[in-house]
Image (cartoon, rainbow, N blue to C red):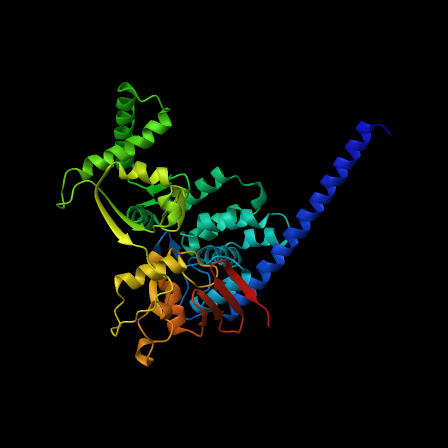
Length: 411
């Protein structure tokens, strides 16, 4: 056997083994889907009160996770299932909704998955695309998918558009209007190079105007001698347009503002420590100098001692306590949840009405959904040490949540 032939033979063997692994993995997912459907049958609720709903960004839409015609499942029971699956709260809700959407609303798609003719991930995407359809419209699309494995995404979109026009034109217009309420602009925390991602959903006309303004300002920067690339000049243009608005002094405080927590050490004074921080993100000291170059107002605060315990007698939480807890925990402390702490409620671990102090040692950041679960269901947690929490689900499953993440506890 020549070297080339041996290589061809080993490649064929590897590919055959890979195909076998794909088939094993797909069979495992199919079994998982079957068990999720069985779980759903045992955890339904009769009305929308207490039913799990989907989220769009930071907005709770109020729509059941699997769409019209699928069973309504208990919100608190779903939290336990998602935790057992090891998925994030929002990602897990979406995943379970996809499975239930296929099982109850798309029988042809479900049958294709169960028979191994359609990959589960493709079926999940079909469930996503048809989620907003009425049960009748979803059934229409499903009937066209008798051979679901041969349908492309563009063809699926055309089917869905036809189903909406055919069965629910008023809803199509209502959804168009409702979609406008989902517009947003989100700016991420800066990375270690001092750069932040910006994402958003805009009205098309607003987006066109914004693009034209950015393009015009980027072109002007180039004409004035900026030799950076067009993409870089466009990013600079966004900042310049923002600063032009800030200089209008609409609220009596023009210009960029900065608040700095200063921690002075001998290494800092000696110029030996070049590391600064934006919230909990390390950035270079040079980056901070560059930012401060365009600042109109600077507020300097002393660094916060995260181990400090100074309770207050009131139930209301002082800003200094909130800041301390956010710096300590960074995110919602429910298993696998990554919602930023600054967007969370602060829960009294020991209720204030039963003697729990309003103190950072007794305050835990929980997003609104998981705060409700702790308050109104059998989910419970204990603070085992500052910043470390041991959660127990309604059926006795356990997780430890700390600064390293979520860790299942085996009983």
